[in-house]
Amino acid sequence: MMRGALRSLILVLLTAGSSVAALLGDRLLPGGNRAERVMGWWGRAFLRSGGWTLRVEGMENLPPGGAVLVANHQSVVDIPMLLSAFPRPVGFLAKRELGEIPLFGKAMAAAGNLFVDRDDPRDAVRMLREAGARLRGGRLVVVFPEGTRSGDGSVGEFRTGAFYLAQKSGAPVVPVYLDGGYRAIPKGGFRVLPAGLLVRVLPPLSREEGAGGTKERIAAAA
Image 1 (tube, rainbow, N blue to C red):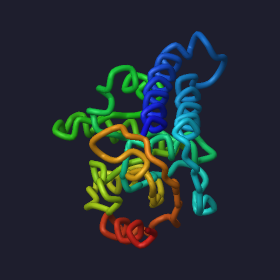
Image 2 (cartoon, helix red, strand yellow):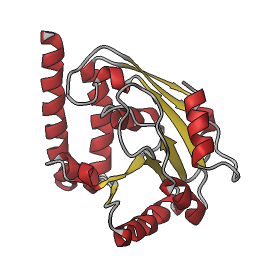
Image 3 (cartoon, rainbow, N blue to C red):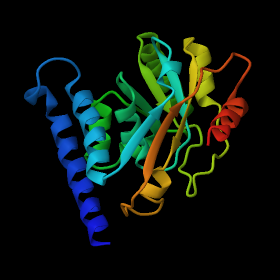
């Protein structure tokens, strides 16, 4: 229990320190998106500091160029898992509340991630425009279509926004199955527990498949 509490404290301090570094990145690091690089490092350091091992499968299914990565959502660990797994930088399309987390939210915004107010149609239009431009520029954009975390690892209902974004931008939809996060840091707290972590990249969807087909594929990958 003491070891878990110590790891929790280390992760909080790591996140706060990395957020400050990301916000100051323009002054500290040469070239490129400095904040994006800092937050990528944070994702890898987060997993190491938590004592978790990440297994990555199916990376051969990742197409070149931009893609909408549609992932199930289990835990706060999902973000560092995805930052660590992919050979290219990934951006996140997330609900506004994540962007309001002190320091961390601003650091994620500085790294190029997008936050949307789901109750504001005008904000949704802005998000679609900005995310579409990034996809057409070859970026990977992660969406958690369940809209909330699972407490037990089950896969909930998928909203359709990610698929509308893919249709408008012309980018493929790539399902991604995540596992282990709900055991590593259970929902409702920040207790760090032992767990194996998995990121499994599935083949891109056909145009006939939508939210229901994606959920079925991800659930079948469990």
